[in-house]
Amino acid sequence: MRYRPLGRTGLTVSEIGFGCASYWGLARFDESQALGLVHRALDLGVTLFDTAPGYSRGEAEPRLGRALKGRDTANLVIATKAGTFHAGGGRTGRDFSSAAITASVEASLKRLGLERLSLVQLHGPGVGELTDDLFEALERLRARGLVAAFGANSFDAEVIGAVIAAPVFDVVMLDYNVLRPERGPLIAQAARMGKGVLAGMPLAMGHVDGQIRKVRGLRDLWYAARALKNHRAEVVAAERFSFLRQIEGMSAAQASLAYVLENPGVSAAVTGTTRRAHLEANAAASGMVLPDQVRARLRAAQGG
Ligand SMILES: NC(=O)c1ccc[n+]([C@@H]2O[C@H](COP(=O)([O-])OP(=O)(O)OC[C@H]3O[C@@H](n4cnc5c(N)ncnc54)[C@H](OP(=O)(O)O)[C@@H]3O)[C@@H](O)[C@H]2O)c1
Image (tube, rainbow, N blue to C red; front, side):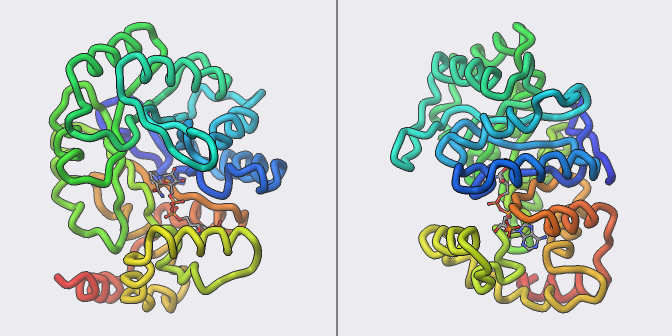
């Protein structure tokens, strides 16, 4: 596993992070398998774990806490979010007031069993929610020693630009994968400003690998249903990249990760998985280099 600085935070992260979200966090996914994946990730040298209070109906964060119990977390970067939460019945609530963000961080520390969070990211804020009052609350949390670094997770270019420009933020998490080359200039801008960049959804939620057609069990049905409900455009767009499934010595997922990581502004690619073989393949992608002809085909498929 290779490691990169997380911008100017002084933190170092494994190039491949583990996303503690989605099906991984749900109670219906076997607890010992879920914890086993985190432990295997640690064995493979993964040091970045990304979660949120609202992920997996509120189950992901406490599950990550259980997985880390008794482990040495000193060199890990445990990242969570604030501003959204599970509001019951599968609905997501949102509150970016300074009081709510402060309470959210305090509750996350308890659920994760930590005294200090490496990174807290605002989860999908609007530009209008990035107020001076909120920034002061974040600085107070930092001054109390509860949080080492702050960031924001957004897929909206205007918000991402505002986050890059705001001194309170050390990190930005955006959607970057073969379907999103247009994020390149924002990543370069973030890197110039000394911000760490985390690529969420680096596998376009598995669609570069034709995830929706591989129904091997309940979890695949769950991912397919999510795709049909929320991400039809990505499913269709990913078919332009089906040639990634035929590279010798590299799976489509590994090629996708290699694409994301060849951008020097990216600190880490955060992938979610429920399968040990996928986790191991994703970890092995650290250090892989895209063949030149694949990169050329990628550019052509991206239309540039
Ligand atoms: N999705 C969002 O809206 C979002 C938003 C903000 C942040 N994030 C962060 O980004 C992380 C990743 O997001 P994500 O889970 O939506 O997308 P992702 O990591 O791009 O894709 C996960 C999907 O890819 C499959 N997969 C993983 N490794 C694979 C491999 N080697 N080969 C084939 N398929 C593979 C998974 O299925 P298997 O279980 O079968 O491996 C799952 O269906 C999250 O865990 C979270 O920390 C996500």
